[in-house]
Image (cartoon, rainbow, N blue to C red):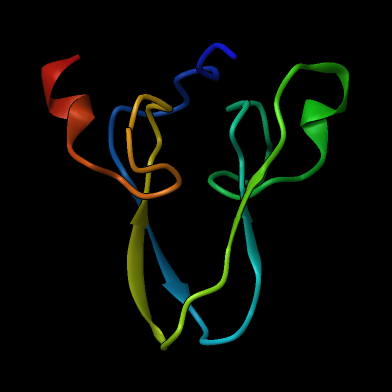
Length: 79
C-alpha cells in the first residue's frame, strides 16, 4: 500500500478521551483532518483506529510518512 496524500508537514495536536475510539485519516483526503470522514471509500486506504488509555494530547501525523502511524514520529522534519 502506498502512503496517503501529504495534507500537512506538521503534526496535528488532538485532545483525546480515554476509552473513545478514534479513526485517523490514512488517505490524507478527509475534510476533517486529521480524522477520517469516509473520503477514502474510493481509494486503497482505510483509517487507522486507536483507543487511548488516558485523557491526553496526542500528535497525529499530517505528512502520512510516519512509521508509527497514526502518531507523528518526526519524519516530516526530513521531507
